Length: 256
Ligand code: PGA
Image 1 (cartoon, helix red, strand yellow):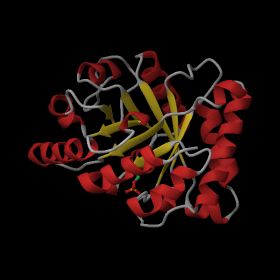
Image 2 (image 1 turned 30 degrees about the vertical axis):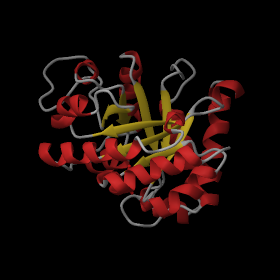
Image 3 (image 1 turned 120 degrees about the vertical axis):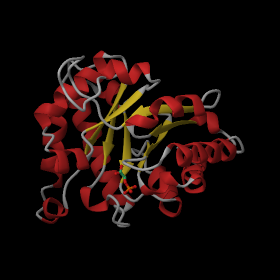
């Protein structure tokens, strides 16, 4: 019912030559995947690569996304990029509220609410990230933290059509430590029931909730089989054409 989405968050990686090689490798490998039509594939390169990567994915099923956007449409915001600029560059998706943006760049829920609205208002898909730190998990605060991150940003008047949520436990990002399938499924189910409270049950069943945090070919299959895990937001493993394609292939083979 929900089409899987496998999204690669390149973070601050790849020169133009490296990016071209990576995309060529992904293209070569994903054409061999049976049922590739059952998976949405997205790459989110850094800003300077968006336009050349729009060209590099041309004619393939790969979609293009950005890792951040400013919430204002234009103006004196040195170093920032607006949603309409991203659209111009060929983006259909924007990641908002990645834990690195929250932690290293001070982005809080109030700012992220503006960003998600700006992305949706610009007719792009927002991938809104939530996740608890290790301290929060150990203090049994996971549910409270995730609930607050969702509640502060997602409201009934926000269009659910182009909304994706990514659950990324901060302690699992880039650490090689993944949430267990039970941990992931429990949080995903809690997010979906909160979405049912905000919207309604039918809408909550249509919104995709991705898992992110050290997802790799050797753990993706089990995670993607969980009933409320609708895809992945991949960091480290998306920088390798074979690993990223292997995860896409696993998503294409999961039947729920
Ligand atoms: P990781 O990153 O796969 O390297 O843990 C995921 C992310 O930060 O989106």
